[in-house]
Length: 243
Image (cartoon, rainbow, N blue to C red; front, top):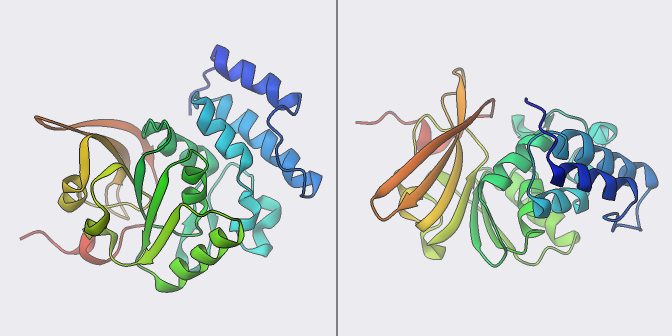
């Protein structure tokens, strides 16, 4: 990953050193310190320049979204396993995908692949309404329980095949897909507002995957390749061969 020290990043690092954004006084100091270090070194020191995203990442207690056996690695610069062969993404990737949506607050966002619920919590910190789907009922239930326990009231979680989206709640200002699909799900594009953005890893489980930003316009869609990535595959309808 390239290192990009913008004026915003430098200012944010200084603020973190001075504890300006340390807002969680009711937790062990070790986690607060690790979170500040994560934001400063893994995010602001790279190309995460959206101040609101940096602040959101600095507030969410990532250690509460991982298994207790991995808690000491919660803020490390790599993904971690969760139940049923799934993962919680590397903090940088969570921040990058969130930043790509260009959220300002008040939007409606669909997440495909709830997993642990961490990404949904980061989105909720940006003052958006989050609708999250996971194909695994146990993961969906557990994530919903964790999010409720942390007081996130603007997140709705359900179990289902994310390839089909959430048509009853469409259209969405943004859609974030946290599992790799071999093709762009057409129903998700259909549920995106004009001017909305979708961020998705495209590629198969054993293939090179490309994090791709899709913007819906009056004339169709525009796509932009963001970065090479490695995600667990989207299961269900996404794995069926096209006719």
